[in-house]
Amino acid sequence: MADDGVVDEDDRPATVGDLVGDLLSLAEPDLLLQAIQASANGSTGSIGVSLTVGGHLISGLLVGGRTYFERLADELESADRSDVMVAVLREQALTYPAGDSEPDDEDSQDPTYVHLVDAWILGRPATKIGFWRGRLSHVSGWSLGVFEPPNQS
Image (cartoon, rainbow, N blue to C red; front, side):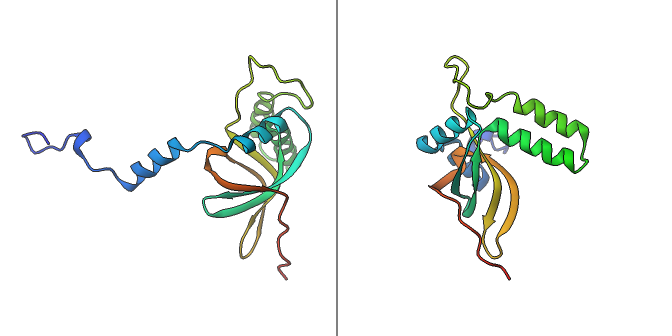
């Protein structure tokens, strides 16, 4: 603390937000899940996965980034949504390799996001969210396979 009674930024106690931010920045993605997403980014296929993120169970089909953004753009376009948003999504899709393409080692980098379609947040009640994109480093657990939501009638 300075003599003038002002607390220096380096001397102030850390807040909970500071601590959580520090912990999240240290989080590393599961390397196997990251490899599965990298593989999906170079293909047109999908694989069922269930992810634990922030205490929530999210289940759906993991797809490549290009497929994710193209399908999301198609969905918005069919609903007569903003042409600008559709154009942005289509442009974003082009930043991912075309399906079934050979990876280019010079340009390839480990994915930092996971992309799901036909996704659900499972809970009471289960909620269909359709499209879901999240940071791989925030996934605390995962399994192969899609959990079907229970009958909610």
